Image (tube, rainbow, N blue to C red; front, side):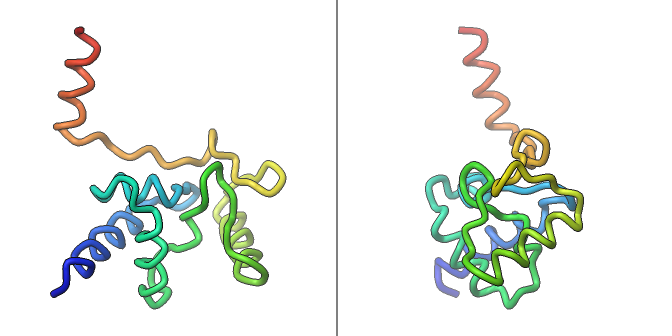
Length: 116
């Protein structure tokens, strides 16, 4: 198995965790999967998934739909059918952004930072 296969598997598993009615940015997914800064790899993982993921729940920074034409319209339609609200052309991220649970390691770092 290639290294990218393992990476893509983790990214796809992370995307599956985004609940109905919520969205995450490409960068959010990369970070939650353990690959900060790998937003472009999230695109490739989605591209090679065969459409068996909740792909519509992954959007660009600020809630922007990045897919052009019919696919972009389909993404918006699917999100709206899940109850996701839009502010103009963007998802209302304050209302619909998925909050990833913090890992134990991240919690410890946050607690140490607050004590300082």
